[in-house]
Amino acid sequence: MLVARDEGRLAATAQALTRAYAVDVESLPADLSVREQVDAVAHRLGDDVSPVTMLVNNAGFGLTKPFHVNDVEEEQRHLDVLVTAPMRLAHAALRAMRDRRDGAIISVASVAAYTPRGSYEAAKSWILSFSRWANLEYRRDGVTVTAVAPRLRPH
Ligand SMILES: NC(=O)c1ccc[n+]([C@@H]2O[C@H](COP(=O)([O-])OP(=O)(O)OC[C@H]3O[C@@H](n4cnc5c(N)ncnc54)[C@H](OP(=O)(O)O)[C@@H]3O)[C@@H](O)[C@H]2O)c1
Image (cartoon, rainbow, N blue to C red; front, side):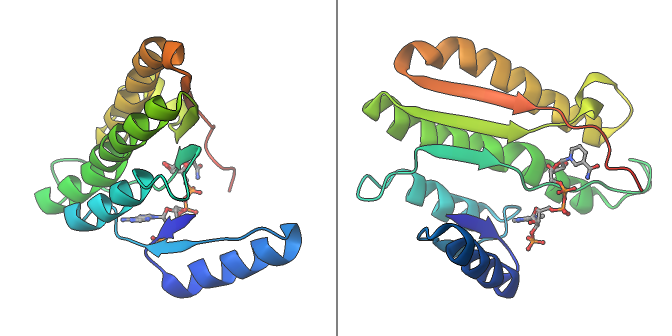
């Protein structure tokens, strides 16, 4: 199941994955800064008819200007995508995965999580800390929670 905002790109990616790997791919267009759309994805994660066994929280972006210069609503959307959406999706996934005693949650953090330099770094620090705790808490229930911390993409 692929989630992002751009329906055209989702459809093209789904088609490419199906062609390359002969897998069924479901697309669920959603803006993860919008609560109702996050909750629609969370609802899908709770669906036992076609269970999701691995959740990857990858969506993210950075802001280029300093915190005090950005519009506060822009900072809110940033926080919603980097923290609130992964929290709500992990919550829904954990409930379903614990019931099945099987599942994995992987969140894309960043090396930025280790350096307090701005609101992006603070948000990545949250997902790193959350994942460390949740893995200790839920691995006994058969669910692993992992954060990955890539380095900046070279230009
Ligand atoms: N690039 C780096 O150097 C780097 C380094 C360390 C960590 N990371 C992290 O790695 C992850 C992926 O980054 P990337 O560089 O691959 O970014 P990217 O190429 O810009 O891809 C971001 C993805 O997130 C989706 N997305 C963005 N905002 C969204 C929203 N509001 N709702 C739903 N989907 C949304 C985008 O699709 P749509 O636009 O269609 O919604 C796109 O598929 C992010 O969490 C980022 O913070 C990146």
